[in-house]
Length: 364
Image (cartoon, rainbow, N blue to C red; front, top):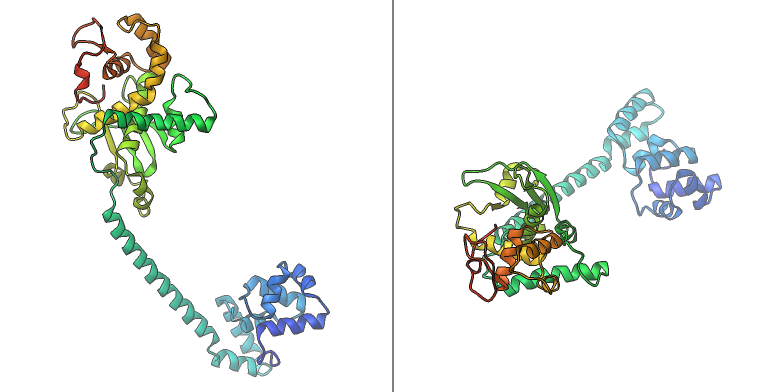
């Protein structure tokens, strides 16, 4: 060790390797490292791990404890064992004992480590503070926008056309599968129990930060066309009302498994019997989007050609092909102005008559 005191770790390794008659590649293979890494070690350009140091000591016939000290990598266990070694061999190792007691090397490493940790903690705190400021300026839900029917229909058609292009289809496969639309938008679906609150039944809700749609398993009509419409309705909220650009930022420090936080960031959808007016317009927009998504105008034009839209039997055939409820189809055709069904009547009239469905009402 006396000879090693005045030289660096890298030079010590270089000399020992030369004495063994090993090339860098040969020693690197024995130690289990890349030869370029070994070259950097010999030039003191990298800090070796304890495992590498012990392997080098083994293959170069060096004292591992001395080599660890020289590399400044002494662990607590090594230190204790080294102290015992010094006590037992004090007379034979005065120089090494003096180095351990007097050298500031280990203390300097510990101090540098602590300073680095403190600096990183400070930087992390500053970044968190900046993030909190940004989050305060962002919103999960977009400010309310008065969309025209044409704008809503165009947004639904854009998704359908993009899916067609992605799957190399010339036209949509009927019925249009709302779950596949969710896959395209990277949204997941889960059917769970959703308890009613003080305002009444909750048919479904969307958790934007989890990109998840929850369907109430307690609704009798949970299977079939009703579910397809419900999912499409939630997709409408995602497209029209959720601020997707801010989702990734807002979700940075939020534990999405927290039920309390999920309640605060859920987007509820209620049944038509609800008397809540606050989000009535947004609910209507989402349901109109759903009808445009599941019953595109260009698809309806093909299906309705040659059929009598004032005939219930014809309408039931069309709704089966579309995979929607008869109520969904009637509302869609009335919104298009193709038919008119007076409230409380079973008599269907040809279109172009202002119907009650033209008024803003939401989810049926």
